[in-house]
Structures are given as structure tokens and as C-alpha cells.
Length: 267
Image (cartoon, rainbow, N blue to C red):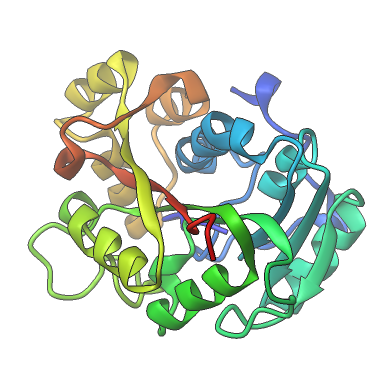
């Protein structure tokens, strides 16, 4: 799913064309849009780095959005089921990514049986949910013993600093690492990894180039509703997944939190 505020195109998934293109609403990121490339790559790197955990498994992506991530998972998984509440997204995924078995449903009541999947993927979605605890309990229910829940979400500390309410209007509650850990443990999970997405060296240089915040420069232009300067557009288009790094250190300084939580294999 994943949010945006608004492709190195050579490495991007082929953009949908005509009626196949999902609208860019700000609630999810969509591949193949130049001004969206920073957010797309920031989300794509988590799929890339956690993909080995889906290898040889049956996987549910809960909140699959445009579907590019579920399609990446299909490269390594035995079976991938996508689930989304937005019927237009469901129809889009069915038409564009036929390897994904797509379901329409509510994340608070997953339409799967108990212990029916080996992994649940939930990237950039939990911050959109009103009942996060109920969703996590449902993830625990549908996972096999020893199965894993893979979660990413914006780090509240850096995404909406100093705010009582989220900056993104589509978010209901953002979390820091301690809050996410607490939610996962209350649902019955053991958190085996808590890491975070950070800017690599090239993005740090772009932060300095664009007045201290490359993100801020993009948000300012998007909110202004004006054409982007050519230099900013070029810099955004040139971002790749290799410009981001996942690391466990300095978790409170991370851009996005990435957690791996396990259901106890002895049930």
C-alpha cells in the first residue's frame, strides 16, 4: 500500500497505462511516476531486503495497494495472496499481476482460515488502520506456528515530528519503535528484528543540496501545487533502492520502522 505526498525509470516496474493506472491519491505510492520515485524507492527497498523471508512460503500481503510488492514476492513465494479494502485496487491487481491471488476484504477480519499462511506482509499500512491491535491479532491467527509477520511503517518521531496528529491526512496513528514493539507483543508475537530505513550517502548529499531536507523540498512543491523545478525533478527521478539502507542502530532516527515478528512455533 504505502503513502505518498504527491522511477531511475530503467529499473522501475513498467508503469500501467490508460485505464490500468491507479490514481495517485496520496494514500498509496504508484510506480512509474517521476515525482513519486523517492517514495516508491523508499518502500521498494523494504520489499527487496525482506524478500528472502518469503522464499518458499505461502504469503499474505495484507493491504497490497497497487500490487507491485505482491508481484515481487511472487518471484520467490510458493503462493501469494493479496488483500485490499479498495475494490479498484483489487481489480487493478487482478488485471495487472495475475500471479497474485487477489481478495477484497477488511484487514480487521482477514478472510483466511486459522494457521493458513507462513508469512504476512504489511508494509506502510498499519498507520492507516483504526484498530491496529485487532489487525495484529488477526495476523497472529492466520499465521502458522513459527510464521512471521513483516511490518513497515513511518517512524512517528521523524515523519510527524512534534505533532499530536499525523502529518499525512490518511494516517490514523503513527508509531515509534517502542510503541510498535508493544503492539506486536500484546498480540502474542515475539519481535525478532526491529530495524529502520535510513538515507544512504547520496541522499544525505541531496538533503544538504536541497536546504537540509530532500523530503521537505518535495513536500513543499507538492503542497504548493506548482510545477517542480527541473533540478529537483531530476534528483528525484534518479533515486534507486540502493540509496537507502536498513540498519538496526539509531532506530529513533530512522525514516521508516521495519519489524519482523514471529508466532511462537510451539502452540
